[in-house]
Image 1 (cartoon, rainbow, N blue to C red):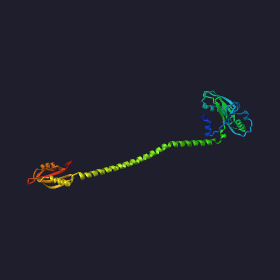
Image 2 (cartoon, rainbow, N blue to C red):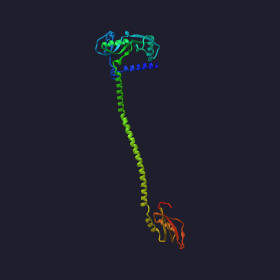
Image 3 (cartoon, rainbow, N blue to C red):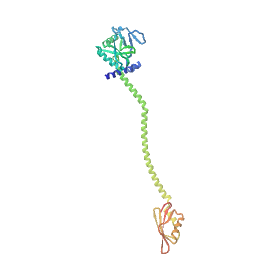
Image 4 (cartoon, rainbow, N blue to C red):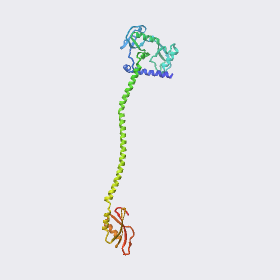
Length: 332
């Protein structure tokens, strides 16, 4: 029951969408054959074909073929009134179908039927129009002999027309194929449009990936260059230290010369020893060793003199001493 209700609801929605489309759209994109309206009431109207109702029952001899939607007179149809409680419109068709099976001798395979479109959820009566399939087949054959190929049989109601039987698939048997082709073309057009729309974003993504790869490469190169720079800094520091040792620190020859000049005549040096940045001398003086240190300090040597130990006296009355010379700025 639920499946039938959903099916009827889907057909109703599809019918509404179908009727909302312009005729040229249905012809071009839905492969629906165009058709003119054929009526039998004689009321003049633009674009409508009027014929005598006798064409439904008499044989003609016309060679031409024109597609028509035939508006059947209500008097040749079976009109049924079905009393129902207030019910949702989506359930009206199922109720009418069940009532047709129970209250009439017809089977669904024997008849075409349609509900009038003026019922609402508050309606208590449904209007059902019924026609035998054999009768409609006979009408189609008679109309075809008069040059009219029936696309639909419709019934005119108070709120527009209701389709009683649709023979579009017989009039245009390849319509489904054309619709599939149109759907494929539409999908292709949408896909092409999406590609054109997304192409800048795709190219931007490719460019961004390329820039990221270039950034990573440059980052690796920067790290390698930083390592090289640190190594070069180390070499530069060592070179600067070497240059300082060579050019800025006092030379041994100069130190010996300055020391020899600064030592007074009353000093006798027994030995000289060089240790790292120090010069150690041992010797004797006939005067005071402490006064000798003060005299050497005032001489402006690049070394700072200091006694390296205790002062002793020799048998001749001289003072024996040890002096250490430290480079200026260094500590003993």
